[in-house]
Image 1: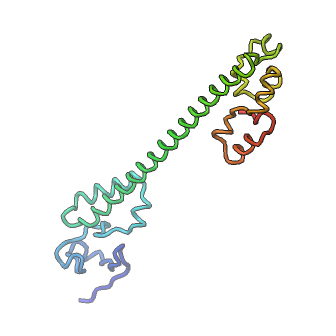
Image 2 (image 1 turned 180 degrees about the vertical axis):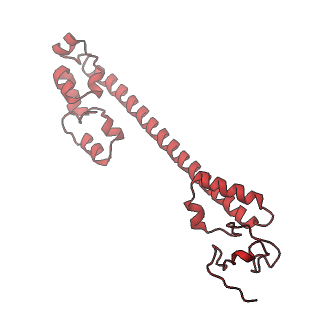
Image 3 (image 1 turned 30 degrees about the vertical axis):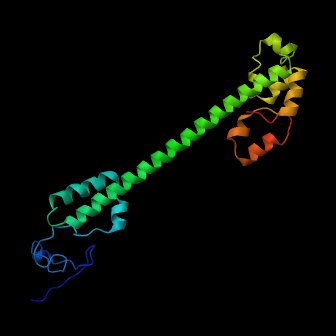
Length: 195
């Protein structure tokens, strides 16, 4: 009997004519001992597995669970792909958590520096940190350490302006900006930029 094979499946096997489907597979993977369910290869292509969406991968898993005794390799491949995706997601989550922790630590460091400089400035200016306009508006002098340069120019006392010229201001850019912003904030440009 002459067999006419038309196309190959994902394993490279020639697909049998419809008349012979349901018969034991003659290839080495099965050795005439099992029948391949239609459209369920013994071994899956890795690219195919990686292209599946989450729900599609779950569907594949459900199919292979039903044929675990004859398609164990395919089942393990599907499970390995699910594990790989879980590992990637866990690693991404861990990276995001570490980045958030670093940002929080940097923000806390900035707040600590603002407070330290405020205490130092209060001592060096003998408490004279606001000019008449600042006092009249009821400006909180701590805002001059984190607010814009326009606020500093409008409401800071001469003593505080002198303090900032010598020590700079603890701007957010000095602590959390990119490299250019950090260099600019420490280069002695006026009060060190705005936050």
